[in-house]
Each structure stands twice: as C-alpha cells, then as structure tokens.
Image (cartoon, rainbow, N blue to C red; front, side, top):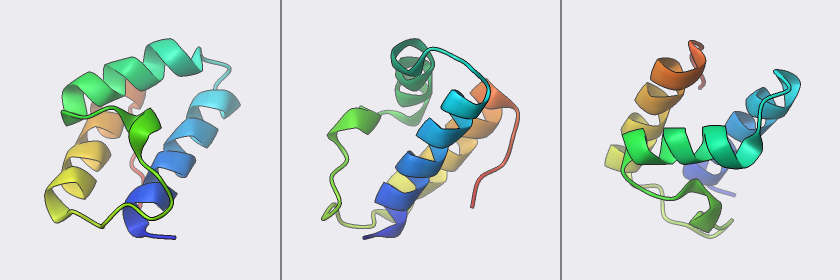
Length: 67
C-alpha cells in the first residue's frame, strides 16, 4: 500500500473515531483536497501534491494532523 492510500484510511478512521458522518466529512475533506478520497485505491501512485493537499484538508476540517 502507498502513503496516499494509508492517509486516506487514517482519515476515515479519524472520522469514525470522532463519530462523524463519513460521507459528509469525507466530502468536505475531498473538496478542500481537490479530489474524491473514496476513489483512492491501494495501488494509487503516491502523488506528493495529493498527499500534501490531503494532510492540509484534514487539518482544516478535523483540526488534527495526520502523517
């Protein structure tokens, strides 16, 4: 698995741990990141721009940092 996929999974776990709606919050994060998180597959290439955008979007929406 790549870093981008791992970050997506960590993001969904954070959403679940906070008891938030996966579709709604995942959509908000995706809008800020510029792509649909649900479309990230295990074999997705590790695009540095997407990784940076996802980390920033998670921080903006959930208020926590992911690595």
